[in-house]
Image (cartoon, rainbow, N blue to C red; front, side, top):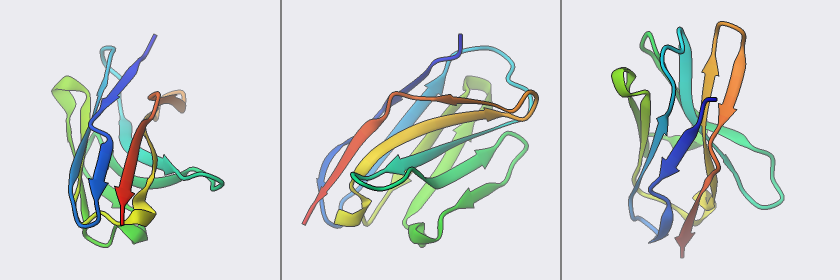
Length: 117
């Protein structure tokens, strides 16, 4: 059973920073993508950033250079450094692991990020 354990959410003021971490249990996931999605109240879940096991990263347009995703393949860990946070970044942030063999999706439990104005 694959488990994703997230940490690092919290309350921060506008302009502040947070670093989210996510560790995936398991062994060899093969080609995969690990990333972060978020869901604000009343809105659909949306992609924030994704990093691929062979390299390459994707960011949502709203990131606009403020966030940086990184991963450690050996430890199946992904990080999201968030700077210049704004109130509209307030959401539950979910870690995701998608395997390209079998196209399986695994999700973390979510971590709350709240940015006060």
